[in-house]
Image (cartoon, rainbow, N blue to C red; front, side, top):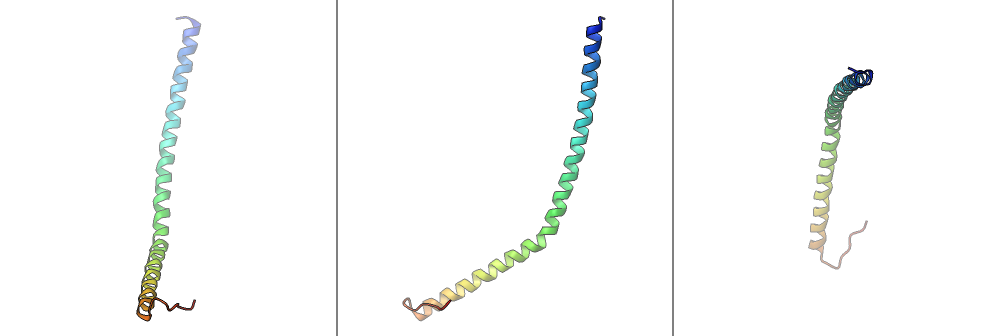
Length: 80
């Protein structure tokens, strides 16, 4: 084997080894990121549920106001 072929072979093997290490590190980081995303979602869930309930309450209040308005007549305006 000539020296050029030997150098290219060593460089290719070293590159493949480095790429393998990088892929393994990337997979580990993806797993860590996925776990952090799950933890973040779990931490946010109570707040999101509270916001959803507040939205439902506001919607019910709006419906009640609309019903009162329709009972009073179309020409009557509610004070805000």
